[in-house]
Length: 200
Image (tube, rainbow, N blue to C red; front, top):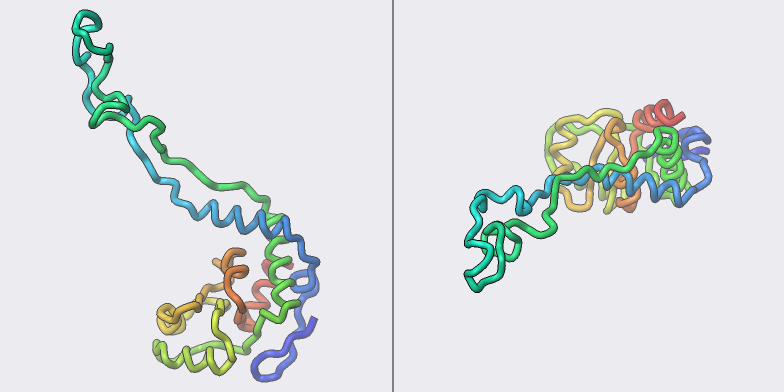
């Protein structure tokens, strides 16, 4: 597969990484697995056994004319525990490395087929100026875009982070959810070569 960069240079892409048949089920599994793994799962509430106090029986079992009660930390009492208390949990969904790489290849191949993958020779800025990056992105006729570079440059990151609907990452932290979410993906040639080495 051949794609042209912004300067008109033709870049040959690996057919294994950028020309794979689309597998919707596999891509869905990869996206769900990634998003599930991103959940903190730290929500916690106290049930009746964890709520402090309530050790003494509020009144005797019989003869008081009231319902029997064993603890004042019952869920129906004020300051009692929660009936179905939330506990910390792990939301991760296991996915094999081979499946994950295949899903990434499917996504990248579909982006190339739909002409949502845009290549650029290099993307560097001298100073961390947001207006400079806005001008560059508009010059490439892009709006909702994910920028993928070989390595994150500090000036580039600082100049992009405040632009709405524009994301940036390097190949090391590239994920399926970001590739699917953004309308277009702007990728440097160096990043393409690194991805081919990773997924090839």
